[in-house]
View 1 (cartoon, one colour):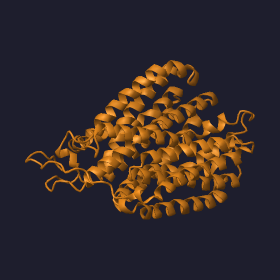
View 2 (cartoon, one colour; view 1 turned 45 degrees about the vertical axis):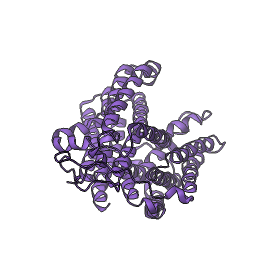
View 3 (tube, one colour; view 1 turned 90 degrees about the vertical axis):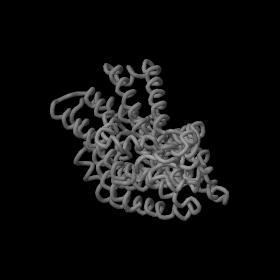
View 4 (cartoon, helix red, strand yellow; view 1 turned 180 degrees about the vertical axis):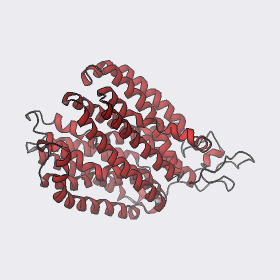
Length: 443
């Protein structure tokens, strides 16, 4: 966990700074109309990748469980699944990722005529093609990230997510410097999803071994669990990336521009805590998987860190958010200090839900995991529909709704059966000489 922390700390700083940098560069490069189209496209892409992050989460859990199974043969090298000794016994996450990529491509191709031209006037075809390509590639990238996490290759994982973000910034800078317009920023949005190909080129042998890892369950069960994780990840993406959309849709009577300052505050306050936490989730799942018989106790430290960070961040936002935001945004997009502080603390509630959700994945309570996220989404929509000020509605939706979902997770954890030691996988057949590949231990 300490090794993961050192690598991921640097990587998450790169991710957080890069996201802000791209948004600022787009604002300085594009016309207001094109900037609005870009932000919608940016939100759409990352909401969809949020759904696909279910692949990352379930791959991390399933491969970690396979590697730690009690029936692991003594001769099987570290970094290889128990099911590597019996190829037919476990799902192949890399193969599943390819199937998901093809499905995503087909879905976008079939639905693009319904939304592309209205979403991106004048660039609908280009946007749809880039979206399909980017999401297909991200399906593989999410799986590769899950495999790296399960194998303890934290440096490679950190390198991948750092380059993903840094490439976007480099292209955004180039687009800004050369005066390129909307199409260039659409490419900037999706290009990072191809970073996994760089890992394949620079470390081909170990990456091929990595892609052969298998899950602890058969393909059908793995697909069911991936589907549940994707459903919950979709709810996550809707509450995080898609929150401005929810906020706008539930504010039909708001005059144009009256929501802009609150939306900007939401965007600025959620990233410092939630973006790093999203990148640390694979490490958290691995940590909880190693304490499956005492998950509630293992949750205490992550939850304490999340709550303390949110409270400390709220205090810092009270003093620093307004002057910092004023450097990058016009005055009519900057909310007052109290709004920044409250929304920063509220982001901690969503972080709590992400942590408790990871615990549900670890103990294989996938149905409860999904139910918690769906509960949070429904409560958020209900709170956003109240007849209150925009800032109050946003604070309630972000601060109360996730706690309702976390309560569902924690209520399930009250049952001792929820945290029973998982049934050991059936013993694999003995490894024959030459069957096991080379190790894929941490660099």
